[in-house]
Length: 95
Image (cartoon, rainbow, N blue to C red; front, side, top):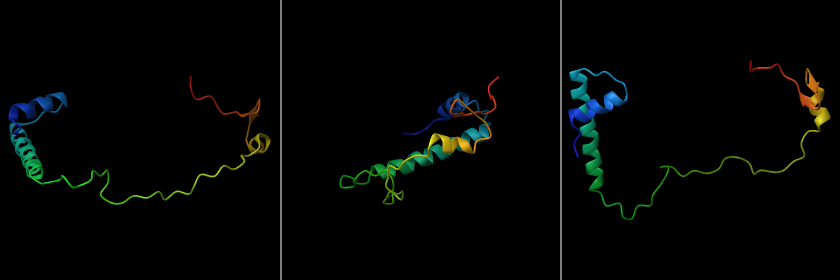
């Protein structure tokens, strides 16, 4: 499959890009080169290759979730500059 200059022009229009004729030619060549590499990959036998989401093996580096008791409301509000009805009181941010 090859990309034409008209298709590059159409994509540029959709992206609201103004391309010169030299840029249009360059992008057409570059996109066709990328598609050429994709065609090479299509010739490879990947029947025995398992699908992957990442090239390196990933492992969880986080600790296990352990339920712990939370801070008592009174203790949490003790350090607040201002509290009202058991909640932190903050300046209004929406007008």
